[in-house]
Length: 362
Image (cartoon, rainbow, N blue to C red; front, side, top):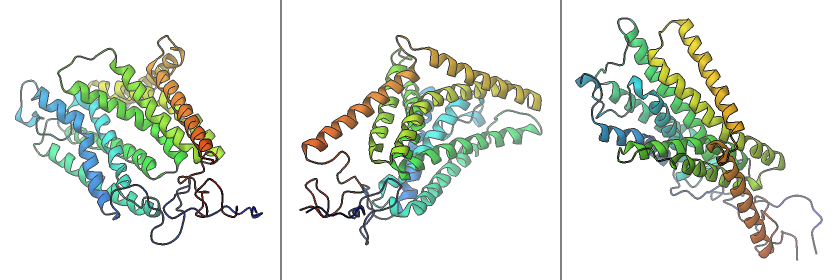
């Protein structure tokens, strides 16, 4: 006889609701698929993630050797952890942002992410700050000549540090959203993270110096970015309907907006060393950057091809993969006698039945 109560059954210990709250009670609740139960591994994982994020620069510096013309021991970047050189500002932003993302992903290593979200966020931030601070101090220790003269020397040095901090904090926030947010929020944050990761991978490949830029590389990177976003969208199937709609609207939009923003940022950063420090000149550079941003948007949205622009290709791949994965899950659910989404990952899947039924049936 089926129960007439409308109260949803409690989730089993160890399952998470989409809003991030833990299901079940007791000491074993809210456990995820991490490797360690102690949260104190998070700062160590965050620090390790930070240094992994610097790999494109570390590989490039090993293959390109010294920098500076003429050679100056103060400007020798072979041992520097960060690319502090005016001509390397775009690479600095990319590796700092990606390192921040990897540091923010540290909570994935723990088994109780959901029940200790604030603690894990704080510990991951601490590990990222220590690693980033060490990298900045190590890079500035030889007192490199970063540009400027007289009273502007310290200002230029501070600009490098501030640029590193802003990029790292943005990446850290995205990483924490992916690792600690609900499934819909994770899908939205996954779009810019996927674009950053694809760009990071491309710089890692090019940093080896063994291959010229292959013509197929942007297409492959776009497919990878779309695939990552599509999987995140498919995982948002257990989210509330409104959250799913928002995720499906924002994630593809961010797949287009993020490359445009990176293009504009790259233009500004490449032009910045040649720009006077006067307020008018900086304001004009920012205005030009906004024009580049708008132009990149217009070019992308009108370039349907064939072949389509790489951001549009990423959107198509993301949508196709999300639909295919959702369809396969739905078919699998029907074959096992479960409703779509009714399984160990569904918060409404209670402890009373394991055969697709709900507590109270029988």
